[in-house]
Amino acid sequence: MTEPYPQQGQWDTGTATPPPKPRNGMGAAALVFGILGLLTCWWLPVIGFLFGLLAVIFGVIGRGRVRKQQATNGGVALTGLLLGLLSVIVNIILMVVVGVGLFAFFQSGGGNTLGQFQQCISQAQSQPNPAAVQQAAQQCADQFNQQLPNLGGGQ
Image 1 (cartoon, rainbow, N blue to C red):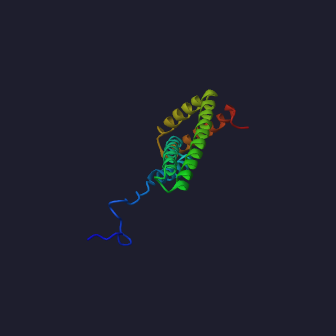
Image 2: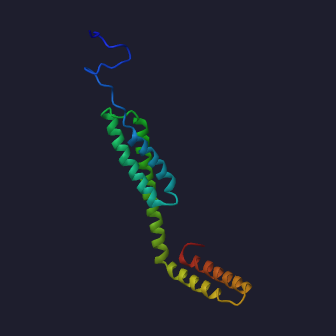
Image 3: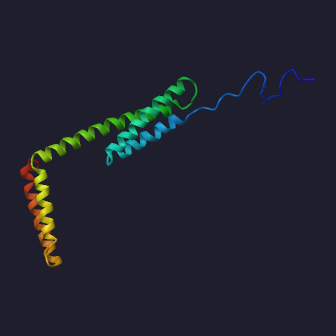
């Protein structure tokens, strides 16, 4: 004899299935990569850019899963997406600023000044005693610092 209704707390395997577990991994990954993107953009702009890009991709996928009701962490996915976008924007700005600065530095003769400084330091290291090496290296640094303002970066 079968019971007409299943006992409380049990699933009737003939008519219903348990709800699937939420797939929250993409939203969490977006948040992690968004945070990493912002943290690394200041000293590793290319790596920060890649982390930010991954955060945007994972955030979009995570938000899509929330809309399809496959995930429950819409806020986490959105936060990761926004942090990823912020990281990408900051990284692009930093790369442009650094690129323009390096271009201007080398266009104005900075590469020659660096070459002269390196040559001066290598000659200073061939001095006979440590005190002479120290004095020659200081002269190289002073000469280098005097040439920098002439490149348009100083007074």
